[in-house]
Length: 149
Image (cartoon, rainbow, N blue to C red; front, side, top):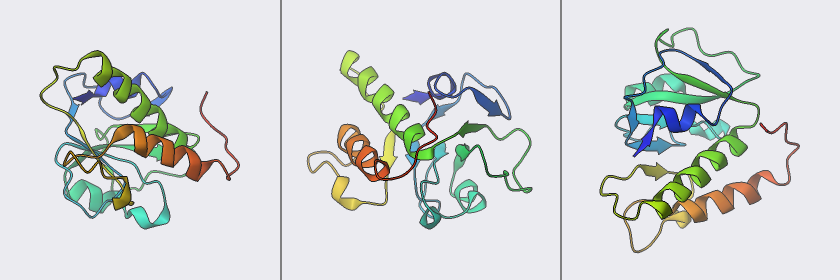
């Protein structure tokens, strides 16, 4: 499973509790879906609110560096700040995909939940990370990126 340490190693700025025991069961771009022990990543205005994501099980979030975190966010709630949310989720997905390729015997995997149902891997009930990363990369390629290096 994707861990707090995995994610925090990809982002230079974080706030909230630093708990290396956090394991993310889901990574979701949709606040309104159940995301037990989830990492919420608001990739667009359609993603929903952080409050909704927390209500649905999010235990941490990737957040745009240029936007204030909502005042209702608990102080201990882990936030990983990204200059570019799309590049941030792409980094997470590529890193996790590489990890899975090196550890093929993993039984518990993090489920990635996205807007685009067409990204579903038809042979697996979870999402295909490589396909999602590629599509996110193409989605963001037409935008000006401040990208996190």
